Amino acid sequence: MKESEPKGHPFHLVDPSPWPIMAALSVLILAIGGVLWMHHIDKILFCSGLVFLLLIFFVWWRDVVKESNTAGVHTKPVQTGLKIGMGLFIASEVMFFVAFFWGYFHAALSPTEATGFMWPPKNIIPFDPFHLPYLNTLILLLSGTTITWAHHELLEGNTKDTVKALGFTILLGLTFTLVQAIEYSHASFAFKDGIYPSTFFMATGFHGFHVIVGTLFLIVSWFRTRRGEFTTAQHVGFEAAAWYWHFVDVVWLFLFVSIYWWGYKPVDFS
Image 1 (cartoon, rainbow, N blue to C red):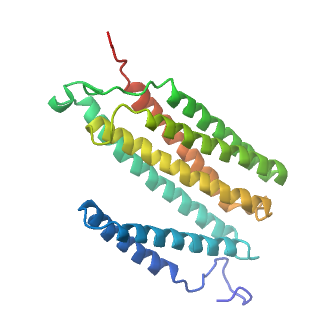
Image 2 (image 1 turned 60 degrees about the horizontal axis):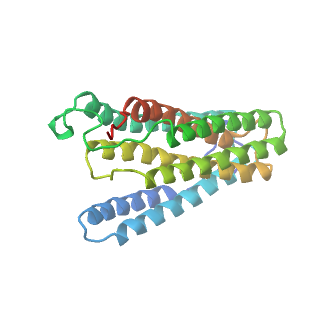
Image 3 (image 1 turned 120 degrees about the vertical axis):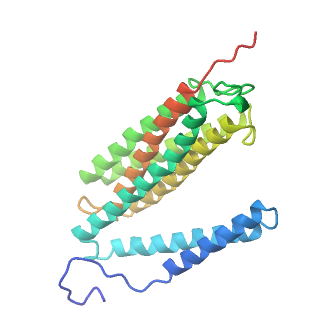
């Protein structure tokens, strides 16, 4: 249905799109390529599927942005549906991290002979929680305040300060990623050194990946804000980015308290 045609409902009927089926095919290629890579047969198929999927994401979200800029398309019910979808996506991400916390606490609360009946396991030197991890905690907490500041300014119709606050948030996100990379470079253990390193790198590494995705999300919002695409009444894209960033903040707090702080045992070198 063309947007110029009259319709008796407030919902948006999207035009036929090739992106869903192409995304499904790219995921299939990605999965097959992943199996081949893990069996040391070939990794080109995996990389090709990943590039293909990222390109589809780009053009698909580009189309959604174009729809949001079309007058009369993103009505209140449509915006509500998009917000519900983002909320359910974040809920699924919560369960994604629950799996890592489950694995960590299962190993930590029931140490076995393989870990020396202790946690952290013997021969593992954990990170000092009040060194780089604490710095990253302060960085993410500060970024939570700047993204809230940006949202407030957007609701007030102050585009200039919204752009400024978003810029600060992006800078803090990039700083967090840099600090985490420095932290990893000083790790005394590798991913394959046991249950502690594997759960540590899976949990913190996937969180770092989410920070990168969230930073890209904010960068897109920054450009869209500068172009005047967000209004006080319609800014679902910005709200989705802000919700995602707050989710990243909260997950890090749980990581810091449980894995870095609770799971820390000072090493006696005497």
